[in-house]
Structure formats: structure tokens, C-alpha cells
Amino acid sequence: MTTKSEINLNSPSSVYLSHLSIDCVVFGFHENQLKVLLLKSNFFGEWSLPGGFVGKEETLEEAATRILQERTGVEKIFLTQFRTFSDPKRKNPGFVKENMEKAGISLENFEWLNQRFLSVGFYALVEFSKVEPQPDLYSEKCEWKSVDEVGELMMDHNQILDEALETLRLQLRYQPIGYNLLPEKFTMPELQKLYETILGTELDRRNFQRKILSYKIVKRLAERRTGVAYKAPYLYCFDLDVYNKALKDGLSGDW
Amino acid sequence: MTTKSEINLNSPSSVYLSHLSIDCVVFGFHENQLKVLLLKSNFFGEWSLPGGFVGKEETLEEAATRILQERTGVEKIFLTQFRTFSDPKRKNPGFVKENMEKAGISLENFEWLNQRFLSVGFYALVEFSKVEPQPDLYSEKCEWKSVDEVGELMMDHNQILDEALETLRLQLRYQPIGYNLLPEKFTMPELQKLYETILGTELDRRNFQRKILSYKIVKRLAERRTGVAYKAPYLYCFDLDVYNKALKDGLSGDW
DNA sequence: CCAAAAGTGTTCGCATTACACCCATGT
DNA sequence: ACATGGGTGTAATGCGAACACTTTTGG
Image (cartoon, rainbow over all chains, first blue to last red; front, side, top):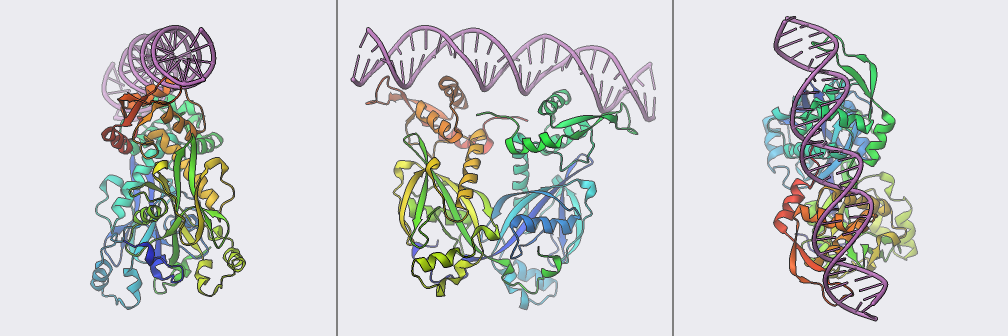
């Protein structure tokens, strides 16, 4: 524990400087499954969340946007900062060394990687079909994984993912969600599946529809989805005015 | 905007290193008012939020706890990280220089203060009466201010305060609040005033009581508050088992 | 004995819940 | 024709909002 006496304005040692990175939990929705975008590292061989560093003149949000643009090809990604991770032990001390050696890379220029890292966690919502996953320079793969099939991730990335999911579930309670995850036109059952998947519960078809419609955040279109089995469902799209207003003011709960 | 090509693992310049500080919004409740703990800086002459730096082996939470312990004398403070502020322009460029000169202090050793700073925002809830405000080495005063009488603060501290308040109001919707802000024993009207003050609205006495009691987070004691005018109200205390459970699981909302 | 605050109970309406029925379509 | 999924309606229930009456205490 650092005590008061150690803190001294006249000696701004590296104590006050931190390596800072960003980690993003990118959610997509496909085939009734909630997906996350993951990278497989060249060096470390493990799966990890997409992330990167913050430029000198960037805000965290700008950096996250830039990073995700590179990984997904999508320009304006909806993202939200949810927590900064700071445990000094979040990176196992021997971690970099072991893996660098394994990969046959000299540690000489990479000593800094072995130091403590803070990471700012973002979660992002993207329309699955618009994403073209692209590995970064240090990764061999970039792929979607179903959230319940994500195995063990690098460092504390499992924890980051878990907290992102929890945050997303909370958001769902008082904010509209879907505009960023679904295509422009979608059916009510699709929207419902999305909610069910995120929440991990089943919802009543009819009550769900009534509730969503009561918020006025979606508009029914004249068209129906064709080419699918059984009765053709109506298509809906979000009413952005109402939707964005709801994003700010919340959906329910009065207190 | 930093482009991909500028980011290079082989040149871990100061791009990846950031000055990192913590700012804390400490809320207290006194005389039916929501209070915030503020410092008046020696150098800068302006009021600011209590804050500080993160030690090499500390988590952000440990650092915030340590800092607030020094400012308040209270050991275990309830605190929550709510956002990391990163706007490169959050500090006006000439800011440090001007104020240092005004204070007649040489800038020689303080150039680092003029660089970009990231700040992690925490909000904290404390029992007002337990706090003994203590200025830090660089401040002349440490005082409680009523939230609606806070004037202009240093840098972006007004924004940090606003977002903390907003977060607190959100928390109130799905989490119990009060244990950290009220003395051990309190009356129902006192708890109600707390809620009203935070929310900025009036609530119905009877409905409020019913709702709180339905959560089972408070227990009624045999005692009543004596020495006050009019009818003596019952005293209550929090049922910590239920309270802490509610902190984790939330209070209402089903979806 | 009266004003102000606190304890207790009731009604009303709306929103959520839990259902049932009909329609459309592909096999 | 029928199984499957989608569209629409309705009764029951519960919770929150609004409100009335009684009780206690200091002045």
C-alpha cells in the first residue's frame, strides 16, 4: 500500500505513468446467438478481445472507434465505456516472457510489454452482417464466437467479457437496444429472440410485442418477410427519433 | 486521428504511457441536503474534487480508498468507479503555467503536470457525521458543499460531478441506497428525504414507506426518536443481509 | 386544544401476466 | 390436412399513485 509520504509532487516518477490499453467486447447477433468478436494472437496462441493503444491526441472513445474500425470495417460503431481494469496482477508476470520465448522472439525491445497495464473496457454493438473480421498485425485470426462457447481467454479477458455482458443486461432494462444489432428491417420475433438471448430467458410473444410497441420505438412497415416458412411476419424498423430520445431518458421506472 | 501505421509495437513511445489520476465525488447527506466534499487548491485557487495518483502496486480501487481515507478519516468507504475521463483538452493548456506563475512557483520541476492526464472517476457515499475533512498538502481547505451550491470547479470537475450524480440517480432505481449515507439508526422520513434529495422530486410518504418495507432492507426497531417536535417516529436500521443481497441482484424489474 | 408530523388503511387504474383463438404458409 | 409460426384479443392479477383518517406530541 502506498502511503501519503511516498506521494510527492516533486518526484513524478513512473508511479504516475501507466501503460494504457483498450479492450473491446464487440457483440453481434446471428442465427439467434449472441456473438463476440475474438482474435487469436500470433505470439501468445490464445484468444483475446480486440484492443489496442490510445494515441496522444485521442480520447478513449476515439481510440476504441479507430481500433474497431480496423477490426470490423464498420465506420460508426456504437460503443460504451463500462469500466477500467487495473489489477496489477491482471497480467501474470511470466506471461509475456514465456510466450515470447515460445514464439522465438527476442525480449529485448519488448520489456515494456511486461510492465503493468491498465485497460479501459468498452462494449460495442454491431450489425453482424456488416462486419468483415480482420486480424491485426499480431493475430492470425479474427472470428465471431458464440458467447456461450467462448473458451479461456488471455489474461483477464474473460472477466472483462463477463462484466460487459452484465452491463449489457442492465442497459436492456432501461434503454432500448437493437438498432445497433439488427439490420434496418427486422421482424418482431427476431427482435424478441435478441432480447431473449441477451437476457437468457424466454419471453411471452404477445406481451413482448405489446411492450415494445408501447414504447413507440419501432414502426411497422407495410412489407412482410417473404421466403420463410409459415406465415409471413411483418417487418419493422426503428423510429430513430423516439429511439434516441429513449436512449437518453430511459424507458421506464419512475422514482 | 492516429492511423494504423503510427501504432508500432517496436516503438513503445510515450504514446502508450499516460499520466493517470483519480478523482472522487464524495457524497454526504446533512440537514436534508446532498453534500459533496471539495478541496480548495493552494496553487490554482479553484475548488476541485479530491483526487490523487495511483501507486505502482495498487488497483484503482485501492488508490481511491487510500486517498479518501486521507481526506475523510473514514476507513472503509463505499465507492464505485463510474467512468474514465480522457479528453486531451480536459486540461486547458495554459492552465498549470498560469496558476504556477500566479502562485510564484517555478515551473522547472512541474513540466509533467502540464501534460495530458487521464482521470478515473469514482463516486463515494459516506456518513456525513463520520467525516473529518482534511485538506491535502496542496490545498488550503477541505469542505462540504451543497451539490446545488457548487460553483465552478477546476478543469472538467463539474462534468465529473454531474456524471457522478447521474450515475447515483440511476443506481437508486435498481439498488438500495442509504446504508452508506445515513447513521446506523434513522427514521423513515429521514430515509425518504435522502431519496427525495438525490432524485430531486417529492415522494408520497405512505407509498414510500410501503415500498421500502416491501424490499425488506430495513428493520423497524422498538425505539423511537425522542426529543424532536411532534409525534416520535420509529427508528429503523438496515438489514445488511438483505441489503447486500439487493446490492448484487437488484431491486426490481424482471424482463 | 390545535397544528404539524407520523402511523395505518383503502381505493383506483394501469401495466404486467397468463391465457385462447384465428390466420397464413410450406410440407 | 396439419403442423408450425405469426397476428390479435381478453380476463386476472398485482403494484404503484392518490387519497383519508387516526394518533402523538410540543407549544
